[in-house]
Amino acid sequence: MTHPDDECPYPRPFPADFKSCPAYQSRQFIPLDTMYQPLEPVLTCRHLETRAMTQRHRWYAACALGDAEARSRWVRDVGVTRLERIRAVQRELAGVLAPFTTRLWEFKGQQLLALRDGKDSEPATIELRRLGAQMTEVLSSFVKGHSQAFAAIEMPADATLQLVRAAIERFVDTHFATEVSLEVPDDLLKRFPEPVQSFFRPPVPKQPDPTG
Image 1 (cartoon, rainbow, N blue to C red):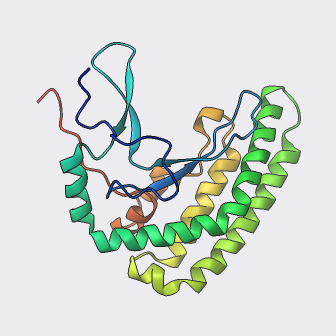
Image 2 (image 1 turned 30 degrees about the vertical axis):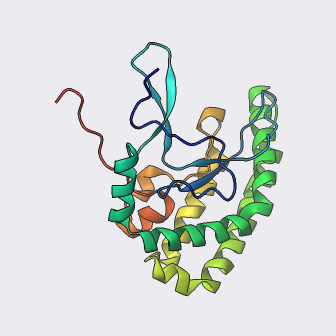
């Protein structure tokens, strides 16, 4: 079977030390089971998305950047050095927030389960907000302690805090399991300059119009 040019060629989930793809942007994903219990975290890529194949009812893991040539071109456009600096800060930040992540998803699962069963979700929501406030406090200390690293990637500290707070608030307030995410909301992110957008969600090239 012929594979689409933009199909991700690498085995998934990605290992923690994955470096085979120069455009790889690590993103942790924690799935929930049918009882809203968090499963083992897996690593995916920010560029990975699901696309339909020409055959009906068939899907594949596509790279939003395009094929191998497009990925290399994107890396050159963004800058190899800048990408490495962004990845380094992201890795450190992920390590700092890791102690909160599993607990955050546990409380989110409790909240969603209560909502599904028509029970009181407020206790879980309160815990989510309390944990979110702790994460924000830790993040604030991290940003202040890494001011030079953030300056090197043109990432203002106030923008970092504002966007992460927004991501946490959306995480707490979302009541549909299919929409739960710790990603920064697109409508807020696009208000910031390109360097800020690159840190949270690297830009992808526009896809060509198949209709011409």
